Length: 173
Ligand SMILES: Nc1ncnc2c1ncn2[C@@H]1O[C@H](COP(=O)(O)OP(=O)(O)O)[C@@H](O)[C@H]1O
Ligand SMILES: [Mg+2]
Image (cartoon, rainbow, N blue to C red; front, side, top):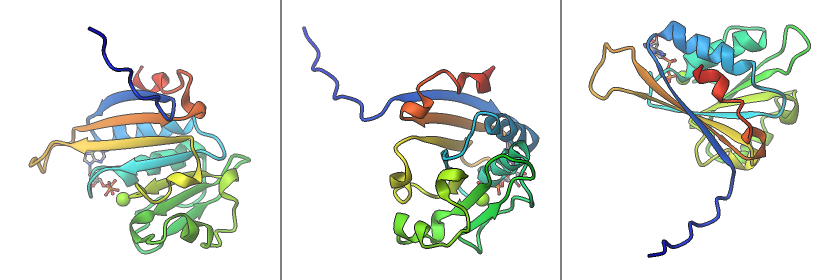
């Protein structure tokens, strides 16, 4: 019996899953991920409060070699961390307070062009996808109901041509 044809995937999708067992390891993952990133990349972080989104971004900032401590952007919508060298700036966005989505992002007057930056967005689902077809989704899960466990399951899914190679495989090795 023939199975119905699967609908054409709108995007190429590359996926890597890893388990992280401490905040230090999450930071290290951020540093390693930074080595894969370049100007124009959009990284969307998903996970409940305390999952480790900002911890990962801290490592990203270290890996990118940007100025300023990466902290939770809760009281600002976006913070720009310029490169200390000649790499791209890191734009760290808390989309939780971004009601208008993309238009509001562009109205922020960030003093940097988003296409020249690495953009990391917390709580961005349904709001910033229009920024680019190519994006990296990072989903962080912690064990439900366990408040002391430091284990986190991380899924990195690269969408679009940008991530069509085997780049993400470097993270699981
Ligand atoms: N494996 C882990 N990865 C990341 N953070 C962890 C881990 N285990 C424990 N933590 C703790 O969980 C908290 C994560 O906070 P944060 O990175 O601000 O989360 P979020 O930005 O997702 O709300 C920190 O206090 C961190 O020390
Ligand atoms: Mg956070």
